[in-house]
Image 1 (tube, helix red, strand yellow):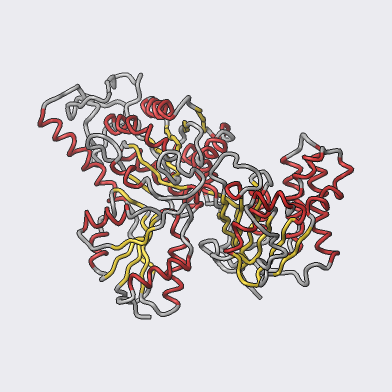
Image 2 (cartoon, rainbow, N blue to C red):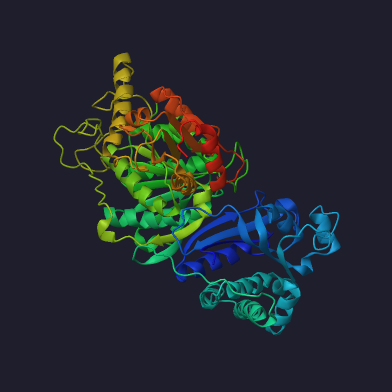
Amino acid sequence: MKKTINILFAGDSGDGMQVTGMQFTNTAAIFGHDVQSLPDFPAEIRAPAGTLPGVSGMQITFSENTIHAPADTLDVLIAMNPAALIVNLPNLKPNGIIILNEDSFKAKDLQKARLDSHPLEDGKLQGYQTFPIPLTQLTLNAIGEHGLTHSQAGRSKNMFALGLVYWLFDKTYDETVNWLENKYQQQAALVQANQAALKAGYNFALTSELFAEQYPLAKAKLPPGTYRQINGNEAFALAFAAVAHQSQQKVLVSGYPITPASTVLHDAAQLAAHNVDVFQAEDEIAAMGATIGAAYGGSLAMTVTSGPGLDLKGEGIGLAVMTELPMVIIDVQRAGPSTGMPTKPEQTDLLQAIFGRHGECPLPVLAPKSAGDCFNMLLEASQIAINYMTPVIILSDSYLATGAEPWRLPDVATLPILKPNFAKNIPDFKPYQRDENLARPWAVPGTAGLEHRIGGLEKEKETGDVCYDPQNHADMVALRAKKIEHVARDYAPLSILGEGEADVLVIGWGSTHGAILTAAQQLQAAGSAVHYLHLRHLFPLHNDLGDVLTGYKKVVVAELNQGQLTWLLRAKYLKDVQCISKVSGKPFLVSELVEKIKAQCHDNINA
């Protein structure tokens, strides 16, 4: 029996595939499986219905083992139209299961998908287990009594398909029934109709004898605790509340809607009762200005954006570096440049985050490794921002933003205490005098005796008065750089995966963690001497990293860009680091990483 199953719900962007996939993800998690979900949204806001660019999908990998990344190939494909079938068929395993909506395979549907023949008749589906089912008509039959319009009723076919798949994998539909009641509590007809479609799909699978068997899985052996499903954007929002709780201060989150960062703002807006205030600005520049103003006024300030938004915030970030105010800037990266492919993942903002400002303008840059790690990273970034009085950039991406995984709720007692250390009662106060971290005091305006002024002009290194003295400017540039270098003193030790000696070190950062980890584990299990190092801190780099690199004959970086971290490591450590690059708007597959590591390191791997 298979221990890991990979299914994909695929259809038009209006078919509710994301909702269907998330409901299956939630149910699989409740049943105790380890789960990884991978949404694939169309890059266009509304591509023409039924066309190849309009295909929307949600892939769910669930297992009775611990998994770190979605599986490479599909076991089951649920295709709501010909376009969804053709786009995803190459990823289906031989003898894999295809469930397709027979009602959406008419001549005009085939034409939209650029098909010259019917896939059920031309042999394209030979070698697969194909189940054509009239999902639309069966749904209409099941919910006809609930008074929906024909269009509304037709959209419930995703619930029919979900019920059918629940039976196939021996799951109950109770969680989704409850979710529908909460989601549409003001629209009783919608609740009843969708529940009826869900149950009809389940009962159809149960009674039709279409499928020869069910495919149940056992629970995964996860560490004990209370779990919930979470994606990266949800984790950031929850972390805002955690930061407010652990600092006993209000948190201001400002931003301007932009894909795929917008849902961070949506979720944060629900947290007013937890001391999280959300400000939707008129544009990215205004959002950055609000963040600076809030930090100056003594708030823990955050701002959230994606790709082009980071460009627009650039000048404001420079002002925040110059004024030395603590804040966190979250950049949920997406494929670019310009508006690019806003729903697709890439890691192409790394060098911009580190260097993309005028003048010498250093700040810490961090990257979470998983959806759950977004929560931890925001707390760590807040601590760095406060301790060193500096802006901090967190680089997430659209893969982390929308992909979901089980997340064990942390014990609040284990979270770091955040101490803003507002200045008060300082004799002979100087706004740019330094502590042991080279951080200046956080003096809140209006505090008696701490009157001061800040701004973008260069300052005298203690008084903060405007100063154009050449040596003072050189000293301040060096001092700001030294302060950021000191941040690396607080990092946890590097953790290298792999036993024994190895000549090859594979390095990754950000959302590629799960795929690279799985690839490294597969290579190690096959007898290859390969170690793996994941970097969460990208600037400044870890103080011990140079020594680590010299211990390997071959160092390879796998990243979803054309080699930005590779370039950085080569420049800093003069090591001939090699790159495994991918810029297709898709995450790494484990199998392609295994093959590329083998190809690049065949002379150094003992396999």
